[in-house]
Image (cartoon, rainbow, N blue to C red; front, side):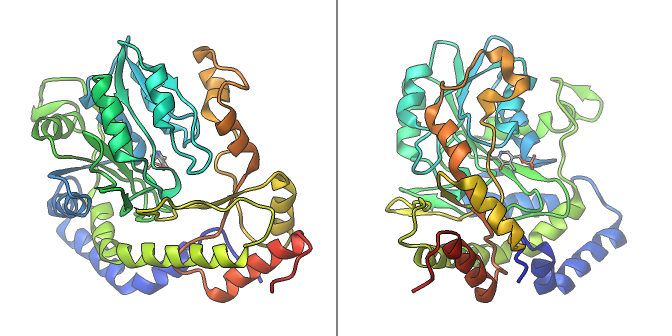
Length: 370
Ligand SMILES: *Cc1c(COP(=O)(O)O)cnc(C)c1O
């Protein structure tokens, strides 16, 4: 039985009519840029996150870039973040001429370790940017206190964590700003690129709104050099259709995670952890094992999708060589890069298909399901 890593067609089949009607309306209106749907989506996402403002932008990567610009990040500044994330977490810092300063992760949650953050902060640290990797929030209190102590702006890379919460915070409520992605495979995905920055700070919200339209408040009057970083109406229309389903989709992902937990118990692999009091949204379900590459080939030979997030930690990427990091600098991130394997997880994954994934993993270890 073929089990894809993700099945967007299956999701589309459940909301086809609504999506096509919403898209049709946009074509009828011919209002494509920063119209009523973007505004409504901004309000809804802000509400979901429990913050005052949402600013719809062109992608999760641009959300990070714009948040750093709004925080005033530029040459001479340092931004502390994780080596174990998607590329743009670090590339956005470099694009602004600032210096990424990395700290290792906690292997249990794959998230930036707040204790290690404090140790690498300097007087040039302008921003601390943790990532809620795979849908598990970082500890909000700990990051807020380290940011306060170091007088840094706290920015969340929440691209993988929409709808997640834990220890008294929702994704978006921990930092001065939070960055979300609506890339099609994210828990809330559009039909192309899209993203959002959220904040409760009115001044930051107004800066972000200016920066996403070339730094202009009024047409052709430019206060700063911004970018073309807008979310479009077509994306907003589709996201407005999908948003009411998000809570249920996240719930089903959690159920799938629970079934993996039961089905894979007793095997020599490390399962993902959900800390007490946290609501993990399982953007990915990532297991860790020494024999990762062989398990990956085994699953692929049985037509079961799986993937590695992330095979090369960011400090070892060729394009960041100038930062001066070397193998061995972040042992936890390097270990996770060697051992982690993501299994199929999405709301439309049927029990049959999931049982197939579990059975194939169990026979890899030579142990049948009891
Ligand atoms: C997806 C992702 C991004 C980038 O979002 P895009 O919309 O693809 O630009 C940034 N950070 C993390 C952690 C992500 O998963």
